[in-house]
Every structure is written in C-alpha cells, then in structure tokens.
Image (cartoon, rainbow, N blue to C red; front, side):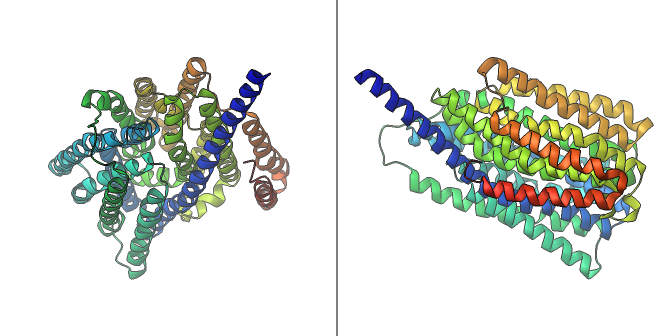
Length: 491
C-alpha cells in the first residue's frame, strides 16, 4: 500500500511539473505572441509602405536587397542562435551554470568574425548585383544583425522571452516603421533611403541585446569554484549542422524572391513579395511559440522526460493552428481584397494564384507545429540539415524549371512543394524515432473548429458574393475570440 501511495504521489508530482512547464511555455509564448503580432503586422506594413512609395521595379529592388541581407545573415550566424539556446538551457537544467561562459565564447566570437568576413565579401561582390549601392548598404549593417540574433538567443537560453520581444520584435520593428513612414511622408522615398531606414535599427538593437546579456550573465554567474566548460567539439558538433540548416531554412523563405528578380525581373519580384507577405503572420506566430518551446523542450529531452516534450509539442501546435489558420483561410477567401491593400497594380490573376497555391501548403505546415525546433532540441541537427537541404533542392530545382515559363506562379508552386517536404519529412522522423507528434486532443479540436468556422461556412456563402464571405469570416472571428477567451486556462 505504501509503495502504491508513493507511486501515486510521484505520478502526481510528475504531472504537476509537466503542467508547470506548459504554463511557463504559455507565459513565454504569450509574451512572444504579443511581439509576433507587432512584428508580423510590422512586416506587412513595411511591404505596404515600400509598395505604395516606390514603383514596382524600385520596390522589387528593395525586396531583393533585404532578402540578400537576411540570407547573408543566416550564413554569418553559423548556427549560433540555436546552439546558444540549446546549450545554455541544458547547462542550467543540469546545474552547470559555471560552464555557460565557455558556451558564450564558443558561439559569439565565431559569429562576430564570420559576420565581418561576410560583410566584406558582400562589399566586394556588390558590382555583380542589379542594385550595387543597396548591397553595399546592407553589408555595413550585417554584423549588427548577426550580433543581435546571437545575443538575444543566449538570453532565451535563460528562458527569458522579454529581451527578444522588447528589443527585436517591438523595438526594431517599430523603429523600422517610423523610419519608413517618415521617408514616405517627406516625399524622399527611394530604394536607398527605404533600405537605410530598414537596416539602421539593427545597430541599436545589437547594443541593447549585448548590454542585457552581460548584465544577466554577471548576475547568474556562480562564485569562483571548480572550473567547468563545454568543449568546442561538443558545442560545434551540435551547432555546425544547424548552421547549414539555418541557411537552407532561410533560403526556403527568401531565395525565391531573389530568383524571381533574376529570372523574371524586379517588377514580378515585387508582385511575388506582396502576394506572399501574408505568410509572415504565420511564420511569426510559429516562431514566437517555437522560441518559448525550444529551451523547455531541450531541458525535457535532456532530463529524459518524453511525456513532457510531447505535451509541449502538442499543445503548442494547437496554439499555432488557432492563430494561423484563420489568417490563411481569410486571405485565401478574400485574396483580391488582401492584394488591393498594396495597390491596384498588384491585383491580378497571377498574384491571386500565388495566394491560392500557398494557403493550403502553409496550413499543413502550421498543423505540423514546431517540428523543426523539436527535432533540433532532440539533438538531431544532422537530420534537420538533411531534411531542409532536400527541401531547398526541391525549391531551387522547381524555381529554375517553372519561373521562366510560369513566372511568379511557378515560384509559388516551388515554395509550396518545399514547405511540404520540410514539414512532413521531419514529422515522420520525429514520430517514428521519439514517438512525438503534434496531433493531441487539443490540436484536433483546433483543426476541426478553425476549418469549419473559417473554411467551410464562409465557402458555403461565397456564391452570394465577397461581402457575404467577409461577414461570415468576421462572425467566425468574433466567435473564435470568445472561445479562446473562454478556454484561455485550458489553452
């Protein structure tokens, strides 16, 4: 009887710890979601400002330059953000806080050196691009972007979501919007001035991130005692595959814009960018939840608690579906209304088809949850690298084959195919190897309710006209908000 009682108590304590992890993830996720809402809407606003202030060709030059900036930043970060989150979280979980300093040195110094080298390479290669002045400009600010990402990642390893939200998602995004709006209102908009306003906020954001991390590290650093450190081999054994995977992953999101600009022209690149910007909302929601899940998932896997990791994965997927499916379905059903926000020149058959091709692919990706983060936090970064590399090859191959004949629609088909590969393949690996999948009871309810409220019912009234569709979506949105508020404790 005593043994049974002890076992029941242990099981209850384990369940309570699991719920505490979910509550902690929920709080961090909520903070991130507030920032993601600002950042996602800010990204749409940046696209809108560039589209209305510049001609399609000039806007295409800006979108191509920012894509080069983000892709070069992914290369220069050499995977350190994920490595820092993973190692700092695990060291704290295992009571090895004294080794955090060695991890920070192993991650931050190489990222700084590589970012400087990458910026210098961009300066040398600038004449090869259609807009060399823009490439030179983004090269100057590239190290600041890399520093900001790496420093904030280290703070997330401490399970702190606030710095990333305040400094990056809120501070940097608002500064970009203010700068772009001021330029547009002053009538001085050009590709160079718009790009300058977009990259400048990375510099103060990097300074603020460095200041905060230094304070936090000094506060939590233990007194002088037995020296402890992580070896470079261990750190880079985990991080190096993620470095390549990070480049490939961002390539999936941005390389197609560069390829459309090169193969079809700057005007079509602007059309493609505008038509695909709704995806930012979903990416920001997934990223916000993923940043909160990552350190806790790493700690759960390190402690040998697959049940806790499974709960984190499944319930976080329900959050992502609840936030993204209404947006995707709403944009798909009212594609012309969405495109008209950016100007009449962006409303047309090709742009509408781009939206319709991407919506179902992004919905499937959301239903897979933070599968990429879960695979990385399980220590399988080499698998992650293989998966995203295959997806990138699919994307590039289909882009080369389809853009010359189909234009932006071909690029959309290529991206949709790559998204499916990049989500379904790692999901199969995670499910088979660790027994982890996103389809818990709460996820299934979210999928059914969102599909019914924002898909089936608006489609049923669609033959009556777009106003009826909009009214059905508005009613579904109100009911959805009430339901989320009503069940906020469970969710």
